[in-house]
Image (cartoon, rainbow, N blue to C red; front, side, top):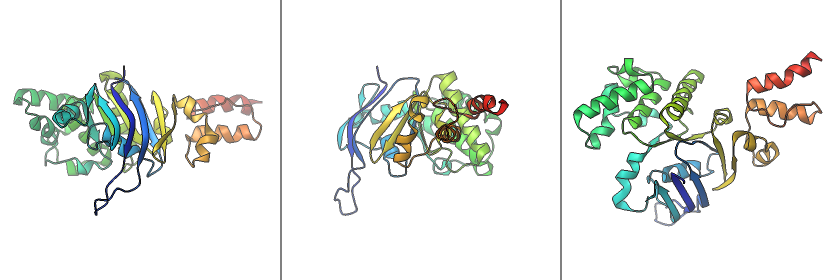
Length: 281
């Protein structure tokens, strides 16, 4: 059974004059299982961020339905409960950091949920340890690196004890080290804590470790499947001006030149293993 179910969702933003613009989502259907790691990919304007904001009722569908653990996001009385279950992490961590001390920032969400102080203390400590930022609990957020700030933003969501975390391009503003820190944290939360992850990203290499990859284009789902199933469709993705992981691209180009390589190489280790026999000939 799906934990989150988007059923034939359509959505259009309104202009300042109140007139609807062209639809951003065109009948999107997507089911997400509890504990699953989903990578949601696509161009700017493909609708992936708009869809993500429907998953915790930040946006409501113009048509169709979204259910979170059976709760209808259109039911106003259920919004707080839905947002307890699905947390949203934005691209820029500075937009989510609200306090001058790290542990106070992480406590902000549970305090607004009316959690008792002793339980807040425990949740804050556990959340900071989960993202490996406990030693920075008394630091000022503005003194932290981009990757550290993003991990604090994630800790603030974890402290609310959601079943699912949706991350909207959390590594877009980070350097390679910051990206690695955040990705390590996300995968750890998924594997060790069983938290459902929906990761929106422009980086195809970040999607390789997901359970399922969903590609969006022009407000629709273009294709979905395991990373190997999706990235083996190189021709389809290139027709829609979408990239593939670098290792996949290299192997695909060499195959086109007649070299005997596997159908879909996903990462550098697989690429080395595939190239080694050719280089040893």
